[in-house]
Amino acid sequence: MKIARRIGIGVVCLLAIWAARMAPARPATVAVREESQSAGAPALTIYNEKFAVVRQLMSLEMKAGTNHVELSDITGHLEPDSVILRPTDSDRRLQILEQNYRNDAITQQLLLSLYEGKTIDFVVSDAGGVQHVVHGKIIRSGFVPHSALAYNTYGQQYYQVQYAYQESGGEQPIIEVDGKLQFSLPGQPVFPALADDTVLKPTLSWELETDKPGALPAELSYVTQGMTWEASYNVVAPPKGNVLELVGWVTLDNQSGKTFRDARIKLMAGDVNKIQPGQPANYAVGGAMKELEDRAEMLPPVTERSFDEYHLYTLEHSTTLHDRETKQVEFVRASGIQSKTVYVYDGWKLDANYQNWPLESIRQQENFGLLSNSKVWVMQEFKNTAANHLGIPLPKGRVRFYRRDEDGQLEFTGENAIDHTPKDETMRLYTGNAFDLTGERRRLDYRMDASARWVDETFEIKLHNHKSTPAEVRVVEHMYRWSNWEIRRNSDAYEKTDSRTIQFTLEIPPNSERTVNYQVHYSW
Image (cartoon, rainbow, N blue to C red):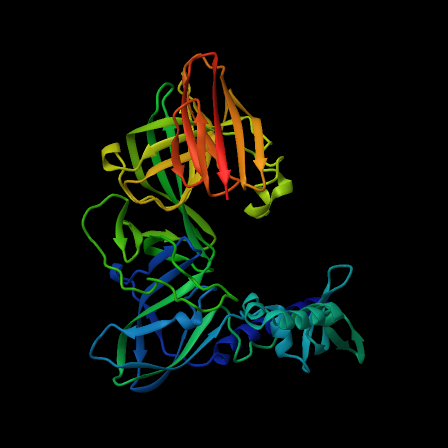
């Protein structure tokens, strides 16, 4: 028992020695102090393309000449070639002679690899829970260095080699204990010290040259993956009528590996081109590293303005965005929005047998276009104008629709997504299929003269309204056989909405039905 206790004390001493030796083993570096004033708080511009631009102010204690600087207060998904470090003092000169980015944070396997060929101690517990120390020589650590970035950069052959090495047992450690080899660790390894080149967190290291000694205020900017934002909207209708209330939220997601305290956050909306791994570098990031102005006046929680070819939304109050945190902020609220419920019947249903057929083949297929859809779509339509209590650019996102029941409870009635929507545009969103409205579409006549190069078709569309109120239904018909067509006969007036589509608008009384028919002539 005394022997076991002495061994346990010895293990503690080893750990203490290891901890004491950590600091001397690290290379001496210039002190880096992040500014604590509000003006020096980190600034983020988050893009809905799943990346962000980070800007932070810092003070570097420099000597004249060359200085070695290390910074670990960065994200784990930084893009090293996007780094911009510049002095904020125009009287000081700062030049980066060399930059290194390390993201191989220390792990047990990595440290084992650094001690390959050396003997270290392993703490082993027996069946009774008594610990003792054995000595083992690390023949192979089992560490297989690889990363998603390396896979994307070096391609399939690199991936296959790494994968083959893992599958062949390369991840199994080999330890020599008392002259015998074993394919597992004999116990918990206790390392004498960290190696000089190990890092505990993702780290940027620089060789910097400056002309004057003393504190040098500087600004660091970089692009990082692991952050995004998205918009979502909740739209509420009253028990009767279509005067809507709208509340918009932005959801911020931080998976970057770093917490940003008291950050000033801006959100960029728009289709900013961002080169993805493996994508040819035809274009650069648009607007990502441009200088952004700050405004100090009293404003709503989120304000919007145009920026370059995009729209910028600014959170007017600083906020802390923790790593692995999702945060919601309200950015728009409006009421009194006049809307309209639109019913659309598109009776033509594509036959899967004809998918990807060229028009030259389809135009003479008699059975093409016979499948019918019976569902009538429900659409919500409203204008994004100032006169309609909106009139602001709305970033893309999900729109959920609710209607308040007579007892005041909200009931979900459908959802859809919008793309980036400028002001003064009409928004029309599909929310589901009508229960009490149905349609049927059938062909009444088909005639073709292949030698004369023409086809005539006649269709009948019938709409049934089982509601106790009248319904206006837009009947959409596609001229799908050929681009040269004309309507020879029609029972109701129609509108040509584009070069291949017409639309009938039918008013259907309660508990009634309406029929529309037309004949189309194709020629080529």
